[in-house]
Length: 398
Image 1 (cartoon, rainbow, N blue to C red):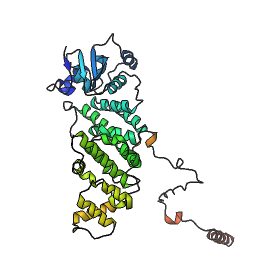
Image 2 (cartoon, rainbow, N blue to C red; image 1 turned 180 degrees about the vertical axis):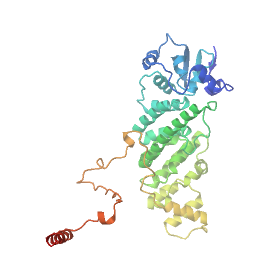
Image 3 (cartoon, rainbow, N blue to C red; image 1 turned 90 degrees about the horizontal axis):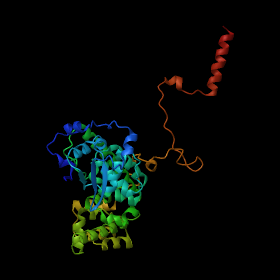
């Protein structure tokens, strides 16, 4: 029995267009009726291929049909070209792979939980199914809150095209035909839109996100995406400083390092400068500096500037710029408008913002008029009366 574990390397030297032609894939649907596909889902009798899908030992067995799946995407076309009875898919969670099969067999997808929708989005991306990726992105957008946004961003950056830290190359380098490239770009756009909305949710719910224990599980790159944002609406910069302290402690434990201030600062790197320390005062400033996220001399400079004392050492241009940034208030306006993926991210209309009695509605901009000025100028009642009287005298003496 032959086992194939990676579709990108199943036939590295084969021409993908030739594989698609051999399997009947043309970038569209297979031509089978929807009822036929739905009837074949989980049909063991007519199955001619078996998938063993899952990661980390959590694997399930799924019967499949070559004539259905080979026409769904170039990934399945390349995967099913191998002469094998069993295909191991050990790079996709079994929940996501099951929803992928349900979609291709025209069965209703079951995106009831964040974990299932997230795994299904990953499967849709890796198997180049933009319509399922859209469905998952919209479902996840409906469920977005501070905790869900952290879960979404935990791995989503690798599926995005425009998000900082995104992968520089597609995960399936063998799929170089135009149809595959377009599908991959569409999947990435849905991931970008979801990540954009997730970051806006984190801005609006910064306190809840920074105190969530899932923050400590983020990688350095994912953490940087959040804490570097200028538009984080924290109730106090101390909340951000304490979150960074907890994350640095967890990072030291993961890497088996001693919990010393120097090791914590090394784990944070430049992220230790993200809190705006000079917006704090009194006890809150003392608590933030006691976390020792800054070097001793940096803490002394902050203390001196906060208490309007002379600096213990000459302050250079770099230090002065940092002190000014730490004293700059955060903007109150959001970074951007959300992408409309679901009713949750829909912008409220004027009618939805409130009644006329309790909300002052913004004035509508006047429409430009292209008529001659004398035609559009509004005349007073006296001018109209005088013009009518003059016309009457003209008619009388004519």
